Image (cartoon, rainbow, N blue to C red):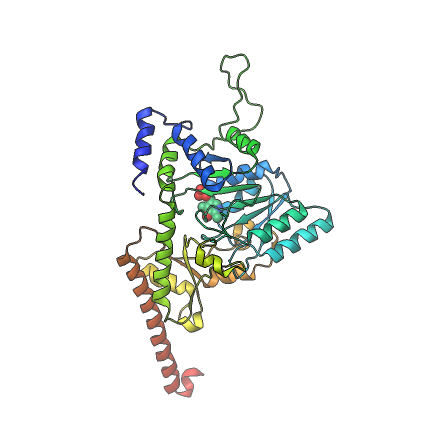
Amino acid sequence: MGGGEAAYVTQAFDSNWLSTVGPNLDALEREFTGLIGRPSVGLVNGTSGLHLAFRLVGVRAGDEVLTSTCTFAASCNPVLYQGGRPVFIDSERETWNLDPNLLAKALRTRAERGRLPRAVCLVHLFGQSADLDVIERICREYEVPLIEDAAESLGARYKGRHPGTAGEISVFSFNGNKIITGTSGGMLTSPNEEWVNRVRHWSTQARDPDPDGTNNYIHAELGYNYRLSNVLAGIVRGQLEVLEERVQQRRAVFDRYCRAFAGLPGIEPQPEADFGCPEDLVTGRTRHTRWLSCFLIDEAAFGLSAANLIRALGAANIEARPVWKPMHTQPLYRGFECLGGEVAEDLNRRGICLPSSSSLSEEDQNRVIETVRSAHELAVVSRQDRVSFVGVSRPEDTA
Ligand SMILES: *Cc1c(COP(=O)(O)O)cnc(C)c1O
Protein backbone atom coordinates (compact mmCIF):
# COMPACT_ATOMS: atom_id res chain seq x y z
CA MET A 1 0.00 0.00 0.00
CA GLY A 2 1.10 3.56 -0.63
CA GLY A 3 -0.29 5.23 2.50
CA GLY A 4 -3.27 7.14 1.11
CA GLU A 5 -5.58 4.14 0.77
CA ALA A 6 -6.70 3.92 4.41
CA ALA A 7 -8.07 7.47 4.37
CA TYR A 8 -10.32 6.71 1.39
CA VAL A 9 -11.46 3.45 2.99
CA THR A 10 -12.18 5.30 6.24
CA GLN A 11 -14.27 7.83 4.31
CA ALA A 12 -16.31 4.93 2.95
CA PHE A 13 -16.86 3.56 6.46
CA ASP A 14 -17.61 6.97 8.01
CA SER A 15 -20.13 7.85 5.31
CA ASN A 16 -21.58 4.30 5.34
CA TRP A 17 -21.14 3.88 1.56
CA LEU A 18 -20.19 0.21 1.91
CA SER A 19 -21.69 -1.30 -1.20
CA THR A 20 -21.43 -0.88 -4.96
CA VAL A 21 -22.41 2.80 -5.02
CA GLY A 22 -20.58 5.75 -3.56
CA PRO A 23 -18.12 8.64 -3.78
CA ASN A 24 -14.93 6.54 -4.04
CA LEU A 25 -16.34 4.66 -7.01
CA ASP A 26 -17.37 7.87 -8.77
CA ALA A 27 -14.04 9.54 -8.02
CA LEU A 28 -12.02 6.49 -9.09
CA GLU A 29 -13.81 6.34 -12.44
CA ARG A 30 -13.15 10.08 -12.94
CA GLU A 31 -9.49 9.68 -12.00
CA PHE A 32 -9.01 6.66 -14.23
CA THR A 33 -10.64 8.54 -17.10
CA GLY A 34 -8.16 11.34 -16.41
CA LEU A 35 -5.26 8.88 -16.68
CA ILE A 36 -6.36 6.87 -19.73
CA GLY A 37 -8.47 9.52 -21.41
CA ARG A 38 -11.61 7.42 -21.86
CA PRO A 39 -14.88 6.85 -20.01
CA SER A 40 -14.33 4.09 -17.43
CA VAL A 41 -16.44 1.74 -15.31
CA GLY A 42 -15.24 0.00 -12.13
CA LEU A 43 -15.85 -3.76 -11.92
CA VAL A 44 -15.13 -6.60 -9.51
CA ASN A 45 -12.12 -7.73 -11.53
CA GLY A 46 -10.50 -7.73 -14.94
CA THR A 47 -12.04 -11.07 -15.93
CA SER A 48 -15.58 -9.68 -15.60
CA GLY A 49 -14.48 -6.70 -17.70
CA LEU A 50 -13.31 -8.99 -20.49
CA HIS A 51 -16.55 -10.96 -20.25
CA LEU A 52 -18.65 -7.82 -20.71
CA ALA A 53 -16.30 -6.59 -23.46
CA PHE A 54 -16.96 -9.78 -25.42
CA ARG A 55 -20.66 -9.36 -24.83
CA LEU A 56 -20.52 -5.73 -26.01
CA VAL A 57 -19.01 -6.71 -29.36
CA GLY A 58 -21.61 -9.45 -29.70
CA VAL A 59 -19.62 -12.67 -29.19
CA ARG A 60 -22.16 -15.49 -29.44
CA ALA A 61 -22.17 -19.26 -29.83
CA GLY A 62 -19.67 -20.37 -32.45
CA ASP A 63 -18.05 -16.93 -32.94
CA GLU A 64 -14.28 -16.77 -33.12
CA VAL A 65 -12.08 -14.42 -31.10
CA LEU A 66 -8.40 -14.18 -32.00
CA THR A 67 -6.04 -13.84 -29.03
CA SER A 68 -2.52 -14.61 -27.79
CA THR A 69 -1.67 -18.15 -26.83
CA CYS A 70 0.99 -16.83 -24.45
CA THR A 71 -1.22 -15.37 -21.71
CA PHE A 72 -3.14 -16.04 -18.52
CA ALA A 73 -6.38 -18.04 -18.88
CA ALA A 74 -8.49 -14.99 -17.97
CA SER A 75 -7.79 -13.48 -21.41
CA CYS A 76 -9.68 -16.24 -23.23
CA ASN A 77 -11.94 -18.00 -20.69
CA PRO A 78 -14.58 -15.23 -20.98
CA VAL A 79 -14.85 -16.03 -24.71
CA LEU A 80 -16.11 -19.44 -23.58
CA TYR A 81 -18.53 -17.78 -21.11
CA GLN A 82 -20.20 -16.26 -24.22
CA GLY A 83 -20.17 -19.57 -26.08
CA GLY A 84 -17.45 -18.30 -28.43
CA ARG A 85 -14.28 -20.00 -29.60
CA PRO A 86 -10.81 -18.54 -29.00
CA VAL A 87 -8.32 -18.98 -31.83
CA PHE A 88 -4.78 -18.66 -30.53
CA ILE A 89 -1.92 -16.79 -32.13
CA ASP A 90 1.77 -17.16 -31.42
CA SER A 91 4.04 -14.48 -29.92
CA GLU A 92 6.67 -12.37 -31.62
CA ARG A 93 10.19 -12.54 -30.17
CA GLU A 94 10.59 -8.75 -29.80
CA THR A 95 7.77 -8.18 -27.28
CA TRP A 96 6.53 -11.71 -26.49
CA ASN A 97 3.09 -10.31 -27.42
CA LEU A 98 0.78 -11.29 -30.28
CA ASP A 99 2.63 -11.61 -33.61
CA PRO A 100 1.13 -9.01 -36.02
CA ASN A 101 2.17 -11.00 -39.09
CA LEU A 102 0.28 -14.07 -37.92
CA LEU A 103 -2.69 -11.88 -36.99
CA ALA A 104 -2.77 -10.39 -40.50
CA LYS A 105 -2.55 -13.88 -41.99
CA ALA A 106 -5.36 -15.20 -39.77
CA LEU A 107 -7.63 -12.31 -40.74
CA ARG A 108 -6.81 -12.67 -44.44
CA THR A 109 -7.72 -16.36 -44.56
CA ARG A 110 -10.91 -15.70 -42.60
CA ALA A 111 -11.90 -12.82 -44.88
CA GLU A 112 -11.40 -15.14 -47.85
CA ARG A 113 -13.65 -17.70 -46.23
CA GLY A 114 -16.22 -14.95 -45.67
CA ARG A 115 -16.33 -15.37 -41.90
CA LEU A 116 -14.35 -12.85 -39.85
CA PRO A 117 -13.83 -13.29 -36.11
CA ARG A 118 -16.08 -11.28 -33.81
CA ALA A 119 -13.07 -9.62 -32.14
CA VAL A 120 -9.33 -9.57 -31.59
CA CYS A 121 -8.27 -9.65 -27.94
CA LEU A 122 -4.79 -8.15 -27.67
CA VAL A 123 -2.87 -8.90 -24.47
CA HIS A 124 -0.09 -6.62 -23.21
CA LEU A 125 2.06 -9.10 -21.35
CA PHE A 126 4.22 -8.62 -18.24
CA GLY A 127 4.18 -4.80 -18.42
CA GLN A 128 5.11 -4.36 -22.07
CA SER A 129 2.80 -2.95 -24.72
CA ALA A 130 2.15 -4.88 -27.90
CA ASP A 131 2.81 -3.11 -31.22
CA LEU A 132 -0.36 -1.01 -31.11
CA ASP A 133 -0.03 1.00 -34.34
CA VAL A 134 0.48 -2.09 -36.45
CA ILE A 135 -2.22 -4.18 -34.79
CA GLU A 136 -4.71 -1.31 -34.79
CA ARG A 137 -4.14 -0.84 -38.54
CA ILE A 138 -4.68 -4.56 -39.25
CA CYS A 139 -7.92 -4.66 -37.23
CA ARG A 140 -9.18 -1.48 -38.97
CA GLU A 141 -8.44 -2.96 -42.38
CA TYR A 142 -10.74 -5.90 -41.66
CA GLU A 143 -13.14 -3.88 -39.48
CA VAL A 144 -12.78 -6.33 -36.62
CA PRO A 145 -13.21 -4.80 -33.12
CA LEU A 146 -10.03 -4.64 -31.05
CA ILE A 147 -10.29 -5.43 -27.34
CA GLU A 148 -7.18 -4.77 -25.26
CA ASP A 149 -6.39 -6.90 -22.22
CA ALA A 150 -4.14 -4.41 -20.42
CA ALA A 151 -4.46 -6.20 -17.05
CA GLU A 152 -0.69 -6.61 -16.74
CA SER A 153 0.42 -3.33 -18.29
CA LEU A 154 -1.03 -0.38 -16.41
CA GLY A 155 1.72 2.25 -16.31
CA ALA A 156 3.41 1.10 -19.53
CA ARG A 157 3.86 3.40 -22.54
CA TYR A 158 3.80 2.95 -26.29
CA LYS A 159 5.15 5.93 -28.29
CA GLY A 160 3.75 8.30 -25.69
CA ARG A 161 0.37 6.60 -25.25
CA HIS A 162 -0.95 4.12 -22.72
CA PRO A 163 -1.64 0.54 -23.74
CA GLY A 164 -5.42 0.32 -23.57
CA THR A 165 -6.06 3.42 -25.69
CA ALA A 166 -6.19 1.88 -29.15
CA GLY A 167 -9.02 -0.64 -29.09
CA GLU A 168 -12.77 -0.20 -29.03
CA ILE A 169 -12.63 -1.52 -25.45
CA SER A 170 -9.81 -2.04 -22.99
CA VAL A 171 -9.70 -3.78 -19.64
CA PHE A 172 -7.45 -3.31 -16.59
CA SER A 173 -7.06 -5.30 -13.38
CA PHE A 174 -6.45 -4.38 -9.75
CA ASN A 175 -5.94 -7.96 -8.61
CA GLY A 176 -3.60 -8.50 -5.68
CA ASN A 177 -0.67 -9.46 -7.89
CA LYS A 178 -0.90 -6.54 -10.33
CA ILE A 179 1.23 -3.38 -10.31
CA ILE A 180 -1.42 -1.62 -8.22
CA THR A 181 -4.26 -3.34 -6.43
CA GLY A 182 -7.59 -2.92 -4.70
CA THR A 183 -7.12 -6.48 -3.32
CA SER A 184 -9.31 -7.17 -6.32
CA GLY A 185 -11.02 -4.98 -8.88
CA GLY A 186 -11.04 -4.09 -12.54
CA MET A 187 -11.81 -1.31 -14.99
CA LEU A 188 -13.37 -1.34 -18.44
CA THR A 189 -12.78 1.69 -20.64
CA SER A 190 -14.03 2.67 -24.07
CA PRO A 191 -14.29 5.85 -26.12
CA ASN A 192 -17.91 4.78 -26.64
CA GLU A 193 -19.63 6.24 -23.57
CA GLU A 194 -22.89 4.49 -24.37
CA TRP A 195 -21.06 1.13 -24.14
CA VAL A 196 -19.49 2.09 -20.82
CA ASN A 197 -22.92 2.97 -19.45
CA ARG A 198 -24.33 -0.31 -20.73
CA VAL A 199 -21.58 -2.20 -18.89
CA ARG A 200 -22.40 -0.24 -15.72
CA HIS A 201 -26.03 -1.34 -16.14
CA TRP A 202 -25.18 -5.01 -16.83
CA SER A 203 -22.74 -5.07 -13.92
CA THR A 204 -25.51 -4.16 -11.46
CA GLN A 205 -27.90 -6.98 -12.43
CA ALA A 206 -29.38 -4.91 -15.28
CA ARG A 207 -32.07 -3.47 -13.07
CA ASP A 208 -34.34 -1.00 -14.86
CA PRO A 209 -36.21 1.88 -13.22
CA ASP A 210 -39.81 1.08 -12.34
CA PRO A 211 -42.09 3.45 -14.28
CA ASP A 212 -44.80 2.98 -11.62
CA GLY A 213 -42.58 4.56 -8.99
CA THR A 214 -43.06 1.58 -6.68
CA ASN A 215 -39.46 0.32 -6.79
CA ASN A 216 -40.23 -3.02 -8.37
CA TYR A 217 -37.18 -4.82 -9.65
CA ILE A 218 -37.59 -4.85 -13.43
CA HIS A 219 -35.16 -6.65 -15.74
CA ALA A 220 -35.34 -6.45 -19.51
CA GLU A 221 -31.83 -7.82 -20.02
CA LEU A 222 -29.55 -10.44 -18.51
CA GLY A 223 -27.34 -8.85 -15.89
CA TYR A 224 -24.43 -9.76 -13.65
CA ASN A 225 -23.22 -8.90 -10.18
CA TYR A 226 -19.94 -7.44 -11.43
CA ARG A 227 -19.78 -3.94 -9.89
CA LEU A 228 -16.76 -2.82 -7.87
CA SER A 229 -17.40 -1.98 -4.22
CA ASN A 230 -17.01 1.59 -2.97
CA VAL A 231 -14.66 0.30 -0.23
CA LEU A 232 -12.26 -1.35 -2.66
CA ALA A 233 -12.52 1.65 -4.99
CA GLY A 234 -11.03 3.62 -2.07
CA ILE A 235 -8.01 1.32 -2.01
CA VAL A 236 -7.53 1.67 -5.75
CA ARG A 237 -7.75 5.49 -5.47
CA GLY A 238 -4.87 5.48 -3.03
CA GLN A 239 -2.93 3.10 -5.24
CA LEU A 240 -3.39 5.24 -8.35
CA GLU A 241 -1.50 7.99 -6.53
CA VAL A 242 1.58 5.75 -6.30
CA LEU A 243 1.38 4.12 -9.74
CA GLU A 244 4.39 6.04 -11.06
CA GLU A 245 6.43 5.15 -7.97
CA ARG A 246 5.48 1.48 -8.39
CA VAL A 247 6.66 1.51 -12.01
CA GLN A 248 10.01 2.96 -10.91
CA GLN A 249 10.32 0.34 -8.13
CA ARG A 250 9.59 -2.54 -10.49
CA ARG A 251 12.05 -1.22 -13.02
CA ALA A 252 14.68 -0.82 -10.29
CA VAL A 253 14.19 -4.47 -9.25
CA PHE A 254 14.65 -5.53 -12.88
CA ASP A 255 17.77 -3.34 -13.33
CA ARG A 256 19.38 -4.87 -10.22
CA TYR A 257 18.84 -8.37 -11.63
CA CYS A 258 20.30 -7.29 -14.96
CA ARG A 259 23.43 -5.84 -13.37
CA ALA A 260 23.89 -8.93 -11.20
CA PHE A 261 23.48 -11.38 -14.10
CA ALA A 262 25.50 -9.39 -16.65
CA GLY A 263 28.53 -11.68 -16.26
CA LEU A 264 26.60 -14.97 -16.18
CA PRO A 265 26.32 -16.95 -19.42
CA GLY A 266 22.95 -18.18 -20.66
CA ILE A 267 20.61 -15.82 -18.77
CA GLU A 268 19.11 -13.07 -20.93
CA PRO A 269 16.60 -10.40 -19.87
CA GLN A 270 13.28 -10.07 -21.71
CA PRO A 271 13.91 -7.43 -24.40
CA GLU A 272 12.35 -3.98 -24.07
CA ALA A 273 10.90 -3.20 -27.50
CA ASP A 274 11.51 0.25 -29.03
CA PHE A 275 8.98 -0.17 -31.89
CA GLY A 276 11.36 1.46 -34.32
CA CYS A 277 11.93 4.58 -32.18
CA PRO A 278 14.97 3.88 -29.94
CA GLU A 279 14.96 7.45 -28.58
CA ASP A 280 11.50 6.80 -27.07
CA LEU A 281 13.12 4.37 -24.62
CA VAL A 282 15.41 7.19 -23.43
CA THR A 283 12.63 9.74 -23.04
CA GLY A 284 10.19 7.22 -21.53
CA ARG A 285 7.64 7.68 -24.33
CA THR A 286 7.92 3.90 -24.65
CA ARG A 287 8.48 1.84 -21.55
CA HIS A 288 8.11 -1.63 -20.11
CA THR A 289 6.95 -1.42 -16.47
CA ARG A 290 8.77 -4.68 -15.64
CA TRP A 291 5.66 -5.73 -13.72
CA LEU A 292 7.44 -9.06 -13.83
CA SER A 293 11.20 -9.44 -14.22
CA CYS A 294 11.50 -12.10 -16.93
CA PHE A 295 14.59 -13.85 -18.24
CA LEU A 296 15.35 -16.54 -20.79
CA ILE A 297 17.63 -19.41 -19.82
CA ASP A 298 19.85 -21.14 -22.35
CA GLU A 299 20.43 -24.51 -20.70
CA ALA A 300 23.65 -25.31 -22.56
CA ALA A 301 25.33 -22.05 -21.53
CA PHE A 302 23.74 -21.59 -18.10
CA GLY A 303 24.29 -25.17 -16.96
CA LEU A 304 20.71 -25.95 -15.98
CA SER A 305 17.29 -25.53 -17.53
CA ALA A 306 14.74 -22.88 -16.55
CA ALA A 307 12.65 -25.66 -14.96
CA ASN A 308 15.57 -26.83 -12.83
CA LEU A 309 16.41 -23.24 -11.88
CA ILE A 310 12.80 -22.80 -10.71
CA ARG A 311 13.17 -26.00 -8.66
CA ALA A 312 16.48 -24.81 -7.18
CA LEU A 313 14.87 -21.49 -6.20
CA GLY A 314 11.89 -23.37 -4.76
CA ALA A 315 14.22 -25.45 -2.62
CA ALA A 316 15.52 -22.14 -1.18
CA ASN A 317 11.93 -21.05 -0.50
CA ILE A 318 11.96 -18.54 -3.37
CA GLU A 319 8.95 -18.59 -5.69
CA ALA A 320 9.76 -18.26 -9.38
CA ARG A 321 7.56 -19.23 -12.33
CA PRO A 322 7.82 -20.07 -15.99
CA VAL A 323 6.50 -17.64 -18.60
CA TRP A 324 2.78 -18.44 -19.11
CA LYS A 325 2.06 -21.96 -20.28
CA PRO A 326 0.55 -21.40 -23.75
CA MET A 327 -3.21 -21.71 -23.94
CA HIS A 328 -3.04 -24.12 -26.90
CA THR A 329 -1.16 -26.57 -24.64
CA GLN A 330 -3.74 -26.38 -21.83
CA PRO A 331 -6.00 -29.41 -21.29
CA LEU A 332 -9.00 -27.02 -21.33
CA TYR A 333 -8.14 -25.82 -24.83
CA ARG A 334 -7.20 -29.13 -26.39
CA GLY A 335 -8.40 -29.18 -30.00
CA PHE A 336 -8.64 -25.38 -30.32
CA GLU A 337 -6.87 -23.84 -33.29
CA CYS A 338 -3.51 -22.12 -32.85
CA LEU A 339 -1.50 -20.27 -35.52
CA GLY A 340 2.13 -21.07 -34.91
CA GLY A 341 2.88 -21.69 -31.24
CA GLU A 342 6.57 -22.58 -31.32
CA VAL A 343 7.69 -19.18 -29.97
CA ALA A 344 5.23 -19.33 -27.07
CA GLU A 345 6.29 -22.91 -26.30
CA ASP A 346 9.93 -21.86 -26.34
CA LEU A 347 9.21 -18.87 -24.04
CA ASN A 348 7.41 -21.22 -21.66
CA ARG A 349 10.25 -23.74 -21.73
CA ARG A 350 13.09 -21.23 -21.33
CA GLY A 351 11.42 -18.28 -19.63
CA ILE A 352 11.51 -17.56 -15.93
CA CYS A 353 9.72 -14.85 -13.91
CA LEU A 354 11.74 -13.94 -10.82
CA PRO A 355 10.34 -12.32 -7.67
CA SER A 356 9.41 -8.82 -8.87
CA SER A 357 7.32 -7.20 -6.14
CA SER A 358 7.71 -3.48 -5.60
CA SER A 359 8.03 -4.31 -1.90
CA LEU A 360 10.88 -6.79 -2.46
CA SER A 361 13.70 -5.72 -0.12
CA GLU A 362 17.23 -5.43 -1.45
CA GLU A 363 18.24 -8.09 1.03
CA ASP A 364 15.63 -10.51 -0.31
CA GLN A 365 16.57 -9.69 -3.85
CA ASN A 366 20.24 -10.36 -3.08
CA ARG A 367 19.22 -13.76 -1.79
CA VAL A 368 17.43 -14.48 -5.09
CA ILE A 369 20.52 -13.34 -7.02
CA GLU A 370 22.86 -15.45 -4.87
CA THR A 371 20.64 -18.52 -5.29
CA VAL A 372 20.56 -18.09 -9.08
CA ARG A 373 24.32 -17.63 -9.17
CA SER A 374 25.10 -20.63 -6.96
CA ALA A 375 22.65 -22.86 -8.91
CA HIS A 376 24.58 -21.91 -12.06
CA GLU A 377 27.98 -22.49 -10.44
CA LEU A 378 26.95 -25.84 -8.96
CA ALA A 379 25.59 -26.98 -12.32
CA VAL A 380 28.77 -25.99 -14.12
CA VAL A 381 30.99 -27.68 -11.52
CA SER A 382 28.95 -30.89 -11.59
CA ARG A 383 29.04 -30.86 -15.39
CA GLN A 384 32.85 -30.56 -15.27
CA ASP A 385 32.86 -33.50 -12.84
CA ARG A 386 30.78 -35.52 -15.25
CA VAL A 387 33.07 -34.63 -18.11
CA SER A 388 36.22 -35.61 -16.18
CA PHE A 389 34.51 -38.79 -14.99
CA VAL A 390 33.76 -39.76 -18.55
CA GLY A 391 37.36 -38.88 -19.37
CA VAL A 392 38.78 -41.45 -16.93
CA SER A 393 36.07 -44.06 -17.40
CA ARG A 394 36.92 -47.49 -18.67
CA PRO A 395 35.31 -48.69 -21.90
CA GLU A 396 32.98 -51.12 -20.03
CA ASP A 397 31.48 -48.21 -17.98
CA THR A 398 30.11 -46.53 -21.08
CA ALA A 399 29.17 -49.73 -22.89
C1 LIG B 1 -4.75 -10.76 -14.09
C2 LIG B 1 -5.10 -10.89 -15.50
C3 LIG B 1 -6.43 -10.88 -15.93
C4 LIG B 1 -7.62 -10.92 -15.02
O1 LIG B 1 -7.69 -9.95 -14.08
P1 LIG B 1 -8.45 -10.27 -12.70
O2 LIG B 1 -8.64 -8.92 -12.12
O3 LIG B 1 -7.53 -11.13 -11.90
O4 LIG B 1 -9.72 -10.95 -13.03
C5 LIG B 1 -6.68 -10.92 -17.29
N1 LIG B 1 -5.69 -11.00 -18.18
C6 LIG B 1 -4.40 -11.05 -17.82
C7 LIG B 1 -3.36 -11.13 -18.87
C8 LIG B 1 -4.05 -11.02 -16.46
O5 LIG B 1 -2.78 -11.10 -16.10
